[in-house]
Length: 381
Image 1 (tube, rainbow, N blue to C red):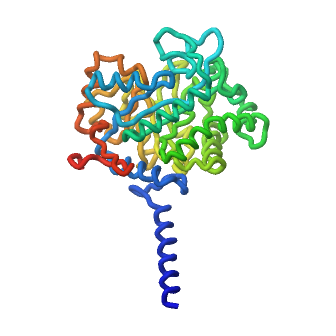
Image 2: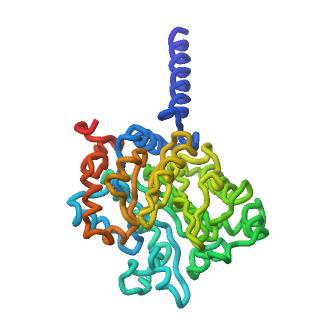
Image 3: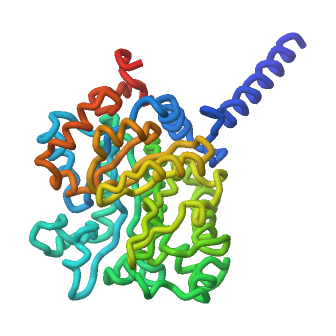
């Protein structure tokens, strides 16, 4: 009987501790997915542990050449970035493929090289992406993935204008069909999602946490998923995506990065207020802004941080890095990620070196990834 009682007590303690781990929070914030993997939770905890003190360096890489811009960062700075980004992308079709080479369609050569079709299948390219992400994770890098996706009726193969719709965005009736459960268009969307989910599952099985940032820059006016404010607009698409990948596909390795564009009033190229497209803190682990044209307004940082109520904020993509003065005034960015070839495009590397040498910017050599746990090396704590 005594042994039985001890067993019951130990079982109770095990269940209790397990429950505590599920609800573990960082600075008051738990992962929005209550079933988030141990690795995803550890990554989130690490990001909160450096919040307001350090910013991780990051670099985007294209599926057609994973090493080009990693190597370029090292050539300029002598260091490597911590955050490794890439794109599930699409296959560009039609006579105007060069027009869309800048975003790195997976079937094309690297942007601004001679433009040619690389001849690889979608399966080969996306499998290569997964394999590379696992390899980079094993080196101690943090993985962030996004997706330039065709409209769901076209799967993964489309002319670029299917993605960059501008004034030809889906009508309200088409949008309603998309976000209504069980319609033909909704089922086509699910099929498109399934095609990427199987690769995210490989990363889950390999215990790789992913900073997942689908449908980026939704407050702009250029992509098919853009410029749909309100509860039945982008917010509904985001929640639908979260529910499908989390509940149906059980992708518990994902941390959800809601990635806006910095608001702007450029005629014909506007980006609206963050709040009009925000699905709520219960669906977002990290709030991100993309900054191009050097547009590092203080409000872009402060308003995002306020909207999230203190949750993590980050620079999802940037064309050029901030000046040291701008960076010193915007202390809550968790990481920055330079978009591909833009690492080559300013001051012969001077601004890149300035940020990589900044005492608050963390490079790969300053990460201790022993035991597959992210932490800073002791001299930085």
